Length: 228
Image 1: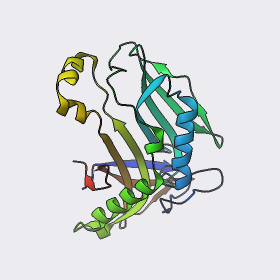
Image 2 (image 1 turned 135 degrees about the horizontal axis):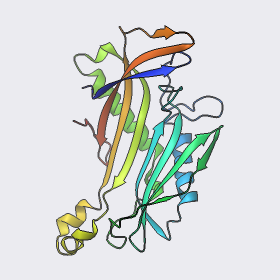
Image 3 (image 1 turned 90 degrees about the horizontal axis):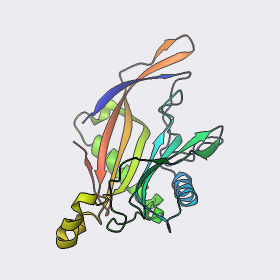
């Protein structure tokens, strides 16, 4: 069930949060309606979908001193242009505001703009997010060791429509099943848990907390399974 274990260093002990809550102050909860709306708006603002085709959007919680506090802190957007150039845009939370960096243009052309199905930011839906998070927590709770773990935060969400490789265009043109595969929305996400019998260790002003990241996949209907 547990994918990996990591040690998080924080200046205060991390506390459990409601995953669909709004966060605190200027922060947004990873799975909140407000955060999903913010991701949609930021992606639409910084990527011109009339010129580019988005194929992946991912958002992540804080990875530094506020780990496990369920704070939306980073958004990654991947897209192609009409010349088949590939880009990665990072939007980060800085001093309470989301700031977009310069898009990183990859040196190698990898994907076909014309053949790839674009990911519409409107498909990032808060009700869907709530459904899959609830289903995932039920899966963990239903395991024989489920009671030993406490839900702490969302590690990440990833929405992706697999782009068509430039060297697979001929197959895409002749193979209907292959085209269908590259129209499907793939969703993956991960939740962070702590073990109830493991205590936080304090070293000066820092607290050391072991946490366990559990990965999941979900289909478009909201059915969730462990991602092995």
